Length: 148
Image (cartoon, rainbow, N blue to C red):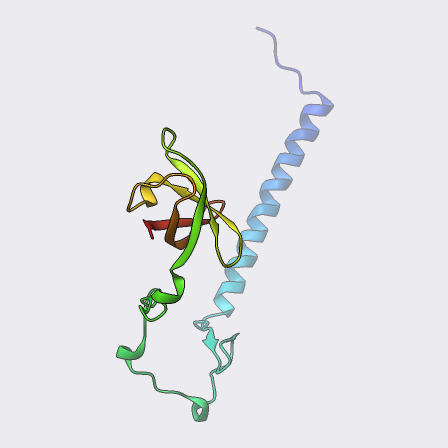
């Protein structure tokens, strides 16, 4: 068996690898020393404007809030404006085989899409209907469609 030859390139790569390892050890020790100096716990405070700060807030600006007054989620919709949401219009197009159509609003003359799932009564073209609007994927849709 022949003895492996140590070339200049191999020795240079080995030196670089050892140098990298030493540098990594030095950085690790430096981080450990730095962490030893920061022995305290760091806090983040919220000031009276809602901004994060590293200084404690002024106690004179403290506001007491009751836990019962905190509302999580979306507030419930009031039923007061339901009469305003009911609109009237005329069916401009309806395909019963495909189950969709369009209704022209009598006030604004806008066209709204309607689907068979949003119908209360059976409709056909040129019927006068009352309906409500609901936001859909591509715009406002007519739902709860009834004959007038």
